[in-house]
Length: 467
Image 1 (cartoon, rainbow, N blue to C red):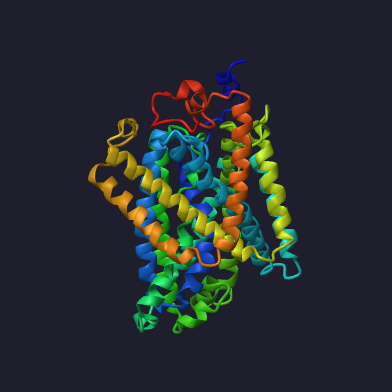
Image 2: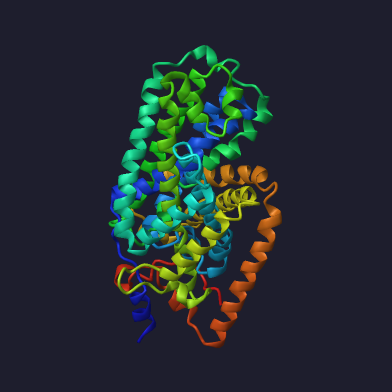
């Protein structure tokens, strides 16, 4: 059997439509961002957190457009890994960009699952959050196991109910706003304002999650950029609207800053006793949908590394019955489930997740700049002509992500550096084994992870291979 036939037998099925891709971006991002960060981030800057949301959204939209453009050139699994490795014809930079992200995905799934358990306690106080989170992970593991079609249908349903629960909060809340509550607007000066930028950008951290599933989205040249840009636009609207409401109805912003459930705190002001229940339902839906999307996206990184022969081969194997990378899924499920029962240090793991996302966002934006500056033929393969706008978004994405990294690295390097060293060791081992076995790296890079050979033209590539 030829290597091309082997790859085709491991490819993924395009079962996710435009709405499913949009719901992946929106519902997969709302969890911690909407239900926690909008309150806690105000501790340093007060009601001006609303303005930080807008500016963070501007950066998020720039990054989404960069990812959307790259996704039309390389509509593959694992998003940023494929974009970087195929542009530079070198597996190492793409691997390093996504290696730490994999750890972040597994930790994020555990934390979000615990968040689901905490919201469930509103209705069932005796529930153990860890057990409830484990139950959620198990259910969604089974949903993802049966393939992307099952994922898409279930995520669309969750997405619809989630948006409804948020509208129940913000529509009546808009009528209860007292603009006097926005004063004083800036409470921490410039330092406090910028200190809120990192936690608030975490609210947009899943904007490119659809790119992780690029090999499973139908009509990717159209649907991937629409999903990333459209989903980000929806997130910006929801975040700005919600933050304007909660800071407009609560007289003292510190009440929100100190609350573990700021939306519930705000809802009680104008929805009374039903406020907690309404937001708790939204919290359940938001955390469940985020776990769902992170699980579906997180399994694509080891799958893509294995496809490219720099990770154990079994991780790129797909179930003959459902067409899913079951070994990648099982690994993520087991690690995330274990972390729900060992929560010590997970906050730091979420910090490294944010740090690693920013590295990926910066790397992809720089990749776009590289293509534009060098006049690479890759730009001719894109699904749309970004023109001057793409130059602007690439610069904003690279500089903005780099600026946030100068804040986000604090407390992250102690985990990031050892983990990266482990990743370099893993890559080096499989690179060496591949060299000993005579693997044709150029032939490997002539494919796209998860994409059948008849869907991809290997002429769409960059420079020299990594051998």
